[in-house]
Structures are given as structure tokens and as C-alpha cells.
Image 1 (cartoon, one colour):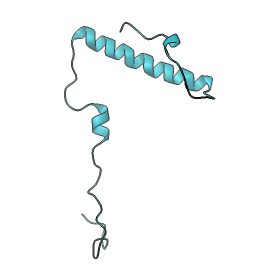
Image 2: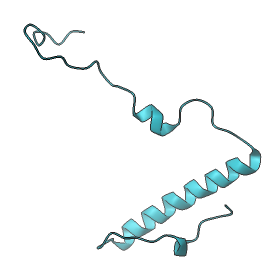
Image 3: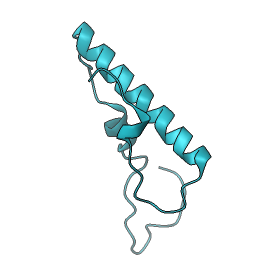
Image 4: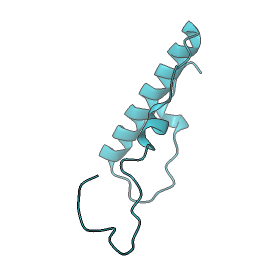
Amino acid sequence: MTGLEAEQIRFVTRGVTPEEIAAVTAVLTAAAAEQSAAAKTGRTPTGPDAWARSQRTLRRPLHPGAGEWRSFSA
């Protein structure tokens, strides 16, 4: 991909403001440019991507039951 043009983006949601259009266009254009640059340099990401990192568990699962909710300590 050599770049992203604003005409290539189609909004299907009604009532999108010009500011929202500008923001989405800027983010998608930057992402396309980053992807294009990575493809040209042959750089491949190492480790989990941002999406996978955001899906990590933040705490242990809660187990309801007798005596399970007495304290906030781990």
C-alpha cells in the first residue's frame, strides 16, 4: 500500500461530524503509512501486538461463595 486517500474511506454511520471524520482519517492514514514503511524495511513486529497486550487479565477471577469475599488482600 503506497498511501491512503481520504476518498478511500467511507463512513456508514450517520451523523458523523467533520471533526470525527478528520480524526478517523488521520489515524487510518498514519496506520497505513506505518504499515507501508514496515513492509518496505522488512521489519516484522516481535512479541505480542498492542491488541494482544490489552487483552491480558488484570486480576484473578472472582469466585463467589462462602468466605470468598472477606478481604481485599490477595
